[in-house]
Image (tube, rainbow, N blue to C red; front, side, top):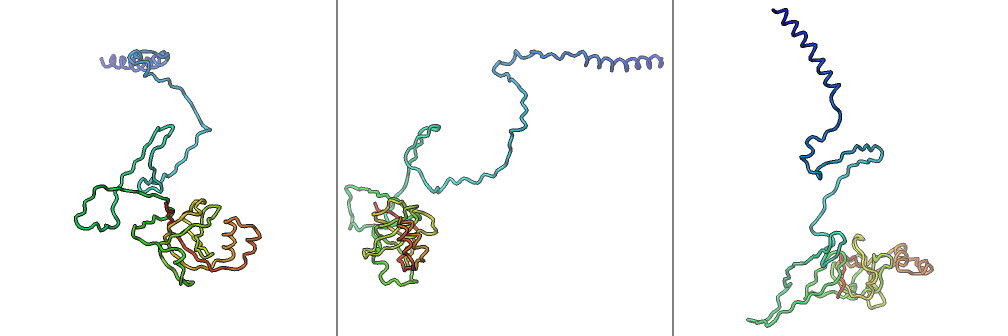
Length: 250
């Protein structure tokens, strides 16, 4: 009895591997649409093999933070972008009086009028109160000795400006003299068409000895002729004002 079982098991052991080999060799390799009718034709994906070895470039970079508050420049109004269309930027603000006028006891206002004057500010913002008296530029340097410095706000008329970049300007002293205005840390410039305009400056006034090299540089910026530049051979004491900010009057 055991002998018969062993022979049958031996036959099965030989038959099962043979059946597996035959199944693999005779299996159908043709594609079939079985089940494809269940999917809409729009969901079918056409798969193609593409091998690209030469034109692939990969790199990594760090993107810094993007500041969204207190931008250097703010927009106001509307502008058209060909991709995003029209964008409109509005402004909401609140005004407070810098000082309270004396209207007497129990005043009654029949109307209130708000007038806003806006101009251009270059460099640091300059705040000027209505009652604040500006120092006239021709009064500032009276009695000022070399080495003295005065921190103040002044007003004056622009008579000359750097023709290349607007990196310096001169104010009229009304005495055949002028004040050389430099901008702190070379941090901002003024328009080259600012000549003739009244400006308010905030900064430091002093008397400076300007070297021959700097005098020649200023003369070149002002468009002087080469022979006039070459004629500058000695340093000069100059009324100088280092401005933190410039406000053009309206």
